[in-house]
Image (cartoon, rainbow, N blue to C red; front, top):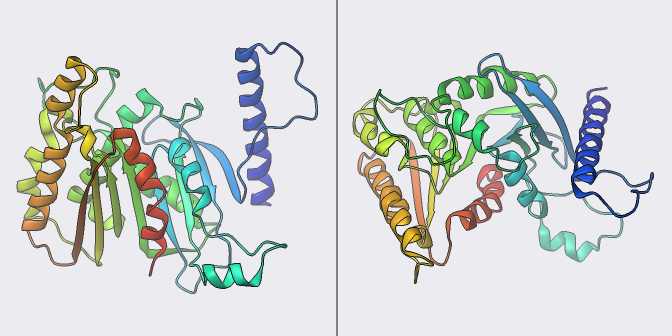
Length: 319
């Protein structure tokens, strides 16, 4: 019943998006009646209002390819879900196909099953600039400059975390068995900032964290300034894996396209800030924390979304 409901919602949402896109595109000829919205396989979608944030979200659920283990599914929570989830499509474990060869299945081997929950916005924008700026950023002290050139609403991270853990997670847990000790949070840019902020304030909600190109410049390096005092209080009830990544071209490309870009990249210091956070976190030698940090050559900011989203599935579902 639930699956039929989700499919109906997904179809209607997709149809609405298709109609809107068609209206914007102004095609030269009418679109044939039998054309349908593009859909991803083994996925469901629905919209949900939050009482904590006051915002509406578009949720995509990536369905596991086989029944849950006794402990429940490991679950991957992906921010900027309309951008990040499609990248996982060619790496998510799949059930055997009807025309699949035994040799190919033997090569793939036994793949662990997992649930993917991607959180986006019903605007349909793959990166909803204003929605994410509000949800993914922490509150700042009065007078602190955000450094953001695009958005005007910030500071809603605490309410967004409540939405994830107190509204969305219980809703999905009614329909999918989740392993309570295998939740992974993936975030990119502002989403990476949210990921590290959650790790350093309420780490009990997830056991694995992947922060891709975290925007640690936000709020005059607010999170970096807060980290030293937070480290003394950080405790992990279960073993916790953390991956922090940044692209070298985010601060140190071979050449800068314009002087303006050079000034902006150097001011935001993505590589230096990320390395500083990882170094301070590692030097704290916190019990139960397994930390890895990567500075990836030849990758700029948006490359790191692709880099992380296609690798985090294995990171989240591996034993």
